[in-house]
Image (cartoon, rainbow, N blue to C red; front, top):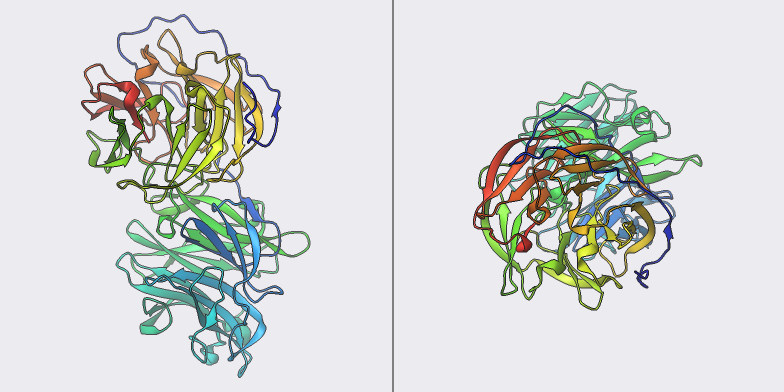
Amino acid sequence: MRIPPILRSQAHAASFAVLATLALVVPAAPVVAGPSAVTAVPEGPRKLIAQGFADPDVVRVGQTWYAYATNDFRHLPVASAPTIDGPWQVLGDAMPGGPGSWAVAGRTWAPDVQPNPDGSLTLTYTAQDAASGRQCIGVAIATSPLGGFVPYGSGPLICPLSQGGAIDANTFVDRNGTRYLTWKNDGNAINRPSTLWVSQVTNNGTTLVGPTTAMLTVAAGQIIEAPDLVQRDDKMVLFYSGGSFASCGYYTSYATAPAVTGPWTPAPEAFMTQANTGLCGPGGADVVTAQDGLGGGDKVVMHAAVADGSRHMYSINLRWVNGLPVQGGSRKSSLDGNGRAEIALIQTDGQIKAWHNYKGFDTMPYGAAAVIGTSFTDPARVRFADLDDDGKSELIHIQADGQIKAWHNDLGFATSPYGNSVVIATGFTDPARVRFTDLDNDGKSELIHIQADGQIKAWHNDLGFAASPYGNSVVIATGFTDPARTVFTDLDDDGRAEIALIQTDGQIKAWHNDLGFAASPYGYTVILATGFTDPARVRFMDLNDDGRAEIALIQTDGQIKAWHNYKGFDTMPYGAAQIIATDFLDPARTIFI
């Protein structure tokens, strides 16, 4: 196949030898059981902005991500990106008029931008009070995320001078819609204790209402700052920084409480340090979740220092264990970003009908239905994949002229959720050989082509959802001559898709993705299951948002039987089975998203 002209680089040669198929006795039905083999290794931090961009705050407006930082030569540096992973472009000053008549320019710190119900945006920021010389918290309003933000009122919103002033405001909106600011009184400025506080505010964040409550306090001389509050399951989790931001000893920790008002229990050890991230002073954290428009798993965006002393912007994936944060975790996708695969039927009239997965891995987990697309009459040409790391799968069509067209998922699980379309590649005339999968856990699916010579070539998704997003290419495997038997799926929750072969003897053999997007990334191999002789009826999907793909069989009676993956990448990892759907008689038209 010719290299598609809109792909921007050439392949590197690579090889991956497929071992000879083992001659085993195949039982009449799938068999499941076996011991542990490979444990997923959490992925480390990613650098997002390679220049000074301290105390970052990120927000999604429409389909674009914006980031704001402590002042440099600009009052309010702003950057934008099509995905949270980038590519980020630093644009200019979002508050060109400065921090307001009450403040002195040049000490505008720790911005927080929050969209309002009326479509405007509120900025809370720290600036130097001209009258007292202390740092205090101000408010500004804009109608565009690029600004210009205009200070609101004639003075600061929070300025407790007897406690050293106030810094590091951050917005939190409870599930019930109540809006709060978390902030710090700057006791360090006057050698007094410092406290993290929470104050209720109006729904546009411009006015304090109700009481202000202390959260955590440290003694004079100690530092606690940069609060960021999130709600997880039945608890509140308060992230904060400690130590001196000017040293590599700066760190991020957290505390938990049953309610916004506490009582707060600090974690027994710091969450992010130089030792466990490899970064110098990881702090100023902004936790980004589904509430902020990020599907497919949470992230922490923070700064860390580099050799010249500037603080660059980084991110790290975030997972939760028993409601507590853990570094790492995989990027996941579904129609609505919750990581539990929906089921869809590409009907003969061209409509695509999807059913929402509201129970995870369970008997008959699918509930409400929606028509998510129309005029797609050939199921062989339809794909779904997350292209821009928002956790919501785009709709993709491999056209007869070789162009691949994608529609952006704007609405999640909804009737007709797809909006803007782009051509993402050309020159792919055989849809049976085209796949999309995330090889490197950045949430942006790579483009895969299973070539006639058995080589599998992959192009890296550099740009997310965009025209011609694919760049560098590599050969990731060889010896896979039958595309109908070749599958990509993440088995162990590391976000890097394994490759599997549904062999003619009914065994399913998988190779672990050790290297991400790289030439020949696949290493250790296991037999996942046996007795699956018809590849057209086999599917892999994550049903319960644990990052480990289940296996399913579309049976001849229309029932779909799924086995739970309870051990990850392992020999025979599948255990309990459930019937998850009935009346799906045509496997060619049945798809999991």
